[in-house]
Image (tube, rainbow, N blue to C red; front, side, top):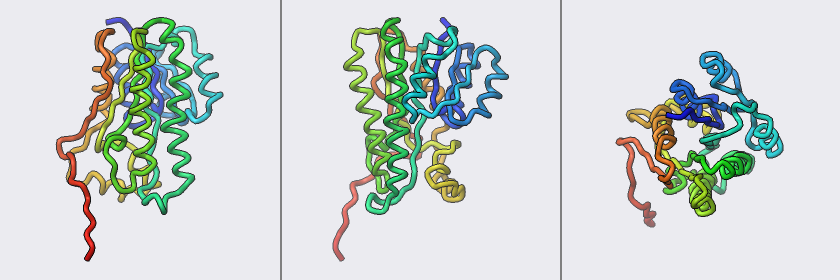
Length: 252
């Protein structure tokens, strides 16, 4: 199998680190991007020559463009972009939620994803090959109390992916949105609850959620699909999770 070059955002932990490690381990070249790089330096040392660490805040439009332009020549021809950087903050109802949290989620989950995609896409189209794999969420499909802006940002990811495929038809470039449900073993809930680890742990009590390795496995499968195959979206949930009834509030 031809060696690929993979760019992964939010690669310092969780899904992103598992994805970066998966591809480096199998012999591909990995551009591992994150605001925090300590864990990535260790990955680069383990897979010398295969991992390029890029300290990057995807919210910074100018920095994203400059970073992509400054890649070493051996990492410039990106075959797979994994837009993984993203977060949820808070679980308060909309009328009590923090506007700062909302701004951060929109800036990271939407604007950051768009900036990186726009920086990488022209090269893919010029080479007539490439994949954009966006990490969405079941929250973008199914609303829940407190999901408000987080769910809306992931709905954006889903629809942006669809519209990418509309623009990219017959170019040799395709896009996929992976939409995981409950996923454990990452910083996701700890970040959402501002470091309240006991509250974060309670989310997964008595369950076997999806793992970062499950997501990395799915990304690898997508990266290995034949060039003529476009997978628009994949919705994933652990077997302990499924759909619920519509809520009906009754007067007493």
